[in-house]
Image (cartoon, rainbow, N blue to C red; front, side, top):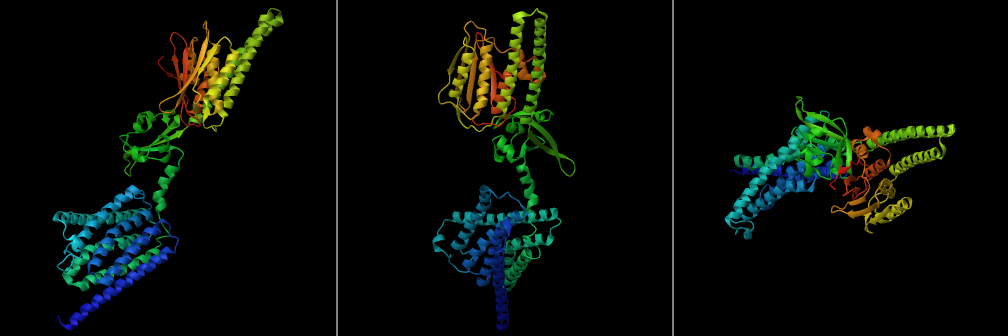
Length: 580
């Protein structure tokens, strides 16, 4: 080689190194500018990307691509740059699949493995050095198996970074096509800014081997100078921080989670694919635990059971609730069904309010009509001189019944309007107060209690008192036994709930009264009063359950199960036919 040719080679390499150092300084300047701006969530990963590009360019400019330090820096930045590009793409377009720590760890772990393997090859072997000894002699003594594993990890790291670049560029390409108002040049700029160093890692060594160091340095200099120009355009005219379409991708997720209704999406086989935050709270689950499960496993009902027009009763974290279900088919652009969206709107309060109005209306209308007719008839007899004291007594009794119905209606209204402000209330004082009142009103009935002193429930005192009073009064008033009695007991179950039971030795709850609770307001004409309805609505108010069982040889036990936490309003508590 002549002196002129050598000088030309040196000059070409020198120019390339100067350009690389200049690109490094320029990229650092762009990074400083970015750090001083309000760049939102995109700014930090973009700043990291700029820092990695600047560091790599500076290292190449100073070392001309030679030396152990250069190899190590080159290894680290070329593993990290694809990850930074992926972070920029995800943040810019609102892709959140790497936002959780476990997923982020899953993305980073292969990079760390590749870095460890590549570092061991660089420092412990002569594979990437021009000398005859390993840069770190202490590492050279490792057995061949260790270096075999290191080689595989290094190769895996390269393939993995390739996949990161493909995913990142794919996100850019897909979203560039989706949002046509964005400048397509920005998508190209993002893809080049992070993709070029990774591509250069494969291309530049081949250029150097084929055409010499001047070609390699020239390609590197050209690439990083172009990266500088692209970065400047991205934060300037192309508006990287001014036109982020992230809301278009995040918005649907936010809208889904901000809905008050329960939303569950399944495929055509009824497997849950997605559910919103309300659904997770309702059914005490998480997306990780529910996705992939059958709909019936998550909500306790099959898809066919959620297809009717009438509200469906579903057990939730707040007790039994009633939901109006709306089903919508999920179709693709060829109108092929891909799944179903279930929207469950809680209509418990509405259903209960309508039921109460209907029940109160029918009971009051029924009792007023019958009792008024009776009063008029008895009064007519007295007027005609045929009634006497018996007719007057009948009028008094009938009027008292009417007043009792009106007072029951008032008590129910107050009970349903009671707040759930009480947190933990003791049962025993309430039980003692109610039993004393019933005992004085029905002295012939022996009323006993078996309530542990420390038994507490999360509920309203007024609601519990109304439930207990109605149950005890029903047990005492209709008890025709020779030695009538009523027992109030309570205990805490294994799951933390509390059962409150009222047992008697009376004739039992008539079938027509049970039919009232079983069938609802359509069977109201069979009911004679508001007592069991008050119990029914009170248990509903607390989100509990009601069970009626027969005693042996006679009598009834009514058991109220109260949840561990207070519920605002639940669905009607349908009595369960428990075994005696």
